[in-house]
Length: 294
Length: 336
Image 1 (tube, one colour):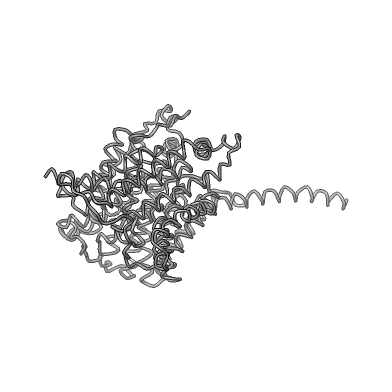
Image 2 (cartoon, rainbow over the protein chains, first blue to last red):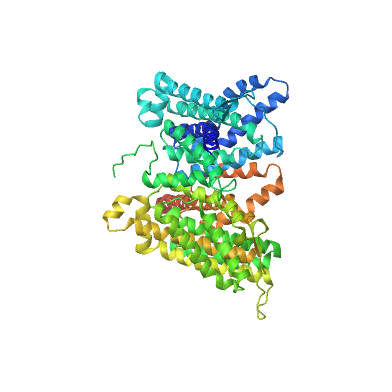
């Protein structure tokens, strides 16, 4: 019993790390442009399909992934430039419809180019496992957690220690005043979208082997990531990560131990957790309240 | 020039006339589709009240729609109730659920509310599958469509269409009443600035809750009508995308208008079909591209676009009249 419990926690953490990386992408975009891009998963799926296609054409798998990271960055930046920049500053409703447009459109592109059949996608990490105290640690789970750590450290270093990171933070926080000190705000927002697309791509590469590659693959993952970001607070990257891990563990434990929930209703778990936490703290666990002058 | 209120009456009459003449102009299948579009229009109208006039977001309109649909279907098949008599009960059930969501929603305003309602929308299809004892799971519930009474000149589809139209007319009247006068002013005050609204003596919680309940009640009514028109409900009819469709319809039509609901409903009902006719593989892409293009070109929806054009035209005409008059005087001077 205890072993099963610990095992489910490990599995939950690994799943949670993937939700956390996608939530990180969502938070990056939200902080930069105040948009909740729930088409992030669809954009990522499209990039993973490109990586798969490169592999089919004979490019080594790892090399394909390495090529697609900057390519997905370009894809995100272009999406911002062409379709978000013209409506920057419009109401939330406009943004929601545009994102629904992305959601439907990008999925349709993947569907029309590669079809609906699920395809096997190779694992990034070797099939190896260690058993410690009756709990299995697979190389894949550990690799996913390690990737999340690297992503987090890399992004926080970028935002904390580099000039460009500082400029990005400034552009996100003070869109009107940043140009006064010479920050090209729109370029910074574009970089934010690019970064988010790359982070989302990495999350999708990590989860593609267990879900099989198909156009609607990321829909449930995005739902969990949305819950994770709301849980953590939309303006806090650290919150997104903690939120993702909480959602992953809660989902895995509830699906195993609460028999009413089972596999069909486990999608409700993150929302239930989110509803309870938000009743107590409407801004999320790590979010800050905006002070508004009326 | 025709005065503005007159224009409004003429436009309303034209829309009403066009809607009434649908069964005479189109084949039965299209009449059926128009009936479904009218039920969507009712649900979207509720959403317009909530989002456009009261400033709350809900992505769960499809959930209340499903509740209404299932209530009607279950009462009609299991207890043999008259289908139209089940509609008030469908409204009541959906409103009760709206109350249950609306109370905590007072604390979740804004983004969190959007996500929690989204969560509800995601949860409904699996829940409908799981509660097989009540909903008959994936098989769904089929029910006989009501036959037209003997005195009625048209066929079944025409009658159902006219019932939906009457339902929409009722809801439009309710919405028109709610958005005018003091009620409408308090709705909008809560949307525009809660703090000031509160200091003017408006009970924020009461107004928000009442709007949420009204909105979900309308969705329940729409869902009940949908079940009658369709003669069949299953989890398939209430996918998560239905909630998306309602949201898209509301925004594309124009959320701060009543006529926008109808335009939005026709948009989400027919555009995906047309896109699929053009190219089945790319239908999603066409739909997505139209949504994005709509937002790039007309942010406030179709009605917003028409309003902008009308104001622009009015200003242009006024300017021309102003230019012409002095010219006339000059030409007269020359003549004398």
